[in-house]
Image 1 (cartoon, rainbow, N blue to C red):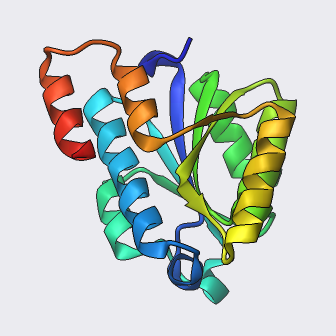
Image 2: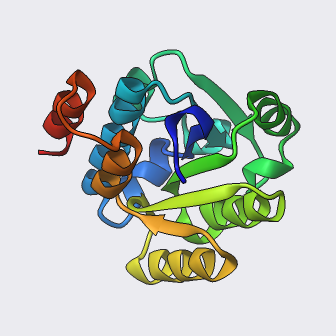
Length: 179
């Protein structure tokens, strides 16, 4: 069962050139932002990664502003799990469920999902908050993540699953985010 206490939001490589070249770029950026805002409402910790920022650019301004001081880890490995700082952070956080969003679905997202699953984490791939440069590569990445055991979800589905009940201030805040 997915709970806020055991969950981490992982934002993979929503940065410069990649973010602008992604299939459905505007929608993906909006949905990643909604996930980040929802995680803040629900008290879920967040971490972001940047693939070779010297060449690809930093996390885009609309996302970095929302991350509000969350840790950003630079990497050169496609899988976040192959980065020492990420591995240490993940171990120290003691989370069992990892929500994954970002770019590119068939490379960095896929390899990270594969490695997280191999390490025993429950992985929740937010299909409307991941993308690749082409729709075909997005489909391929999603399909392969699912075959490996990732749970497919969407922004709204995930946030309401974490919320569990209506009638609270959190419910009101989440409802505004997804409208």
